[in-house]
Length: 325
Image (cartoon, rainbow, N blue to C red; front, side, top):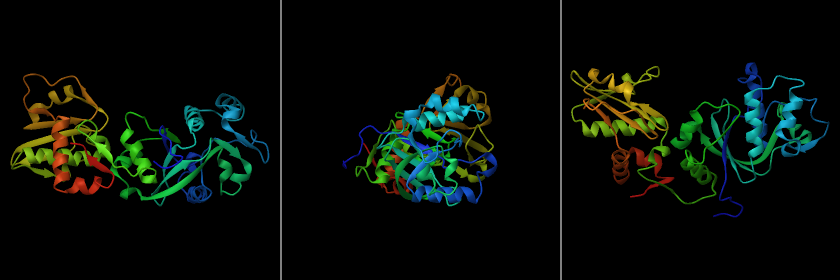
């Protein structure tokens, strides 16, 4: 392990967009993000000139989240998002990591934190629209490429809805946290994936593809119909057809699947396959035989075979992962 690499570290997803809703999608955002990367900082908004003294440099922990919010409320309406952002920035420590995606270019960067959160008029004067920042941290940025090319596990977490900053959960996102360290270059070890956690190495679409591979291998004569995958269809992912027989499925990485919903729809399909990395709500009714809950080990075996054959999932994952037999 490299020097100055923390054993216990946190990872934060951030948006560098300290602008009002009407200004978050224009050239001002591009200018601020470019300068933030060049000046090696990451920051949050909700600044107000009345709070900071000219040429002042001050630590967030010195002021305190509560005191800053109290002062802020004298001039502006506070929000839950402000509280969340302040709390998360106050948690950031040296040696933590930050992941962000730039507006317009879609380039992704990992930042390794070099300081606690602070405000510096001098530092922000070098950044176009930098006065929109209230609190910043110093970071060492590394460009990891366009969004489409980064590992699917990170694409998955970055596609989830977020505001200014989001902290990755230690248990739910331990695969992603290890991946961040590897991508930054602080770890040369490949990440072991097992039957208990392999789905965390895949984003939602890749996991759907793995389930589709499993279904096709277990149902000869059926053909996947790509056009059946509709973004506004919440109950099913896609269909497989064999003349007038239809198989369908539902796949979730980290959300429960309600078995009761599918028990009520079972008569409409030859088979319904369900897979959830998290778990299931309720049970399939005993008299319903055409709803199949895919076991993690069964799906993992498909992934293992693909690695052995150097297939599509091997090509996607092998640079950072190894299969633990």
